[in-house]
Image (cartoon, rainbow, N blue to C red; front, side, top):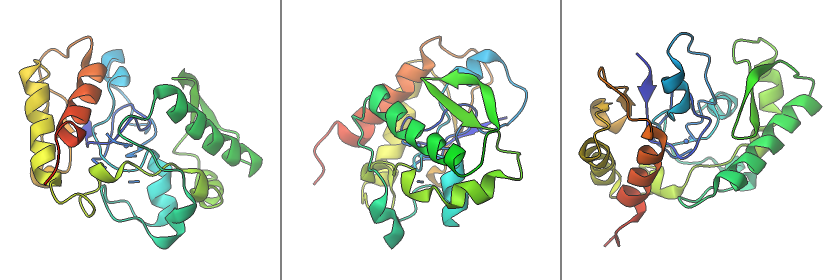
Length: 207
């Protein structure tokens, strides 16, 4: 069963950390090759709030969603809760272009939101990723538990909002993300996830 963590629009497929729904730095579990699953799951963003790229965490040596950004992250583009799909695609395309410039050419056939995703099981990927860390977008600070003092409350509200809209995701412990529901998945699940995340993490004034 795929895990979902709040990340922005991180490369979505079967996994999303809480910092990519935000896209750890996007959760980015960039279309992680989880294997199996039906097409509906491929359309639903992974629930993860963190980096937009599954590879980014590996390159940074930081794979925990919502961790604080190291000093080297100052060069990375910063996502916002209201970052448009087009802007996200532009930033992610710059990252994949960097991979190609550094000798990695093994990408999945599926193009998602205008972005091609790398085959994560290719042994050549880590070396290329390490050279492209500065291109991986950082998730919005609201999705970083170390920068958002209301993170736990916001995360619970995010889950509650999806439940109110009949997207019955199964929350994981410690606000780490969620699993897909056992029952039906709404056809607009991705939109529900995004709208609820924006509402929960940015829709009310923080004290």
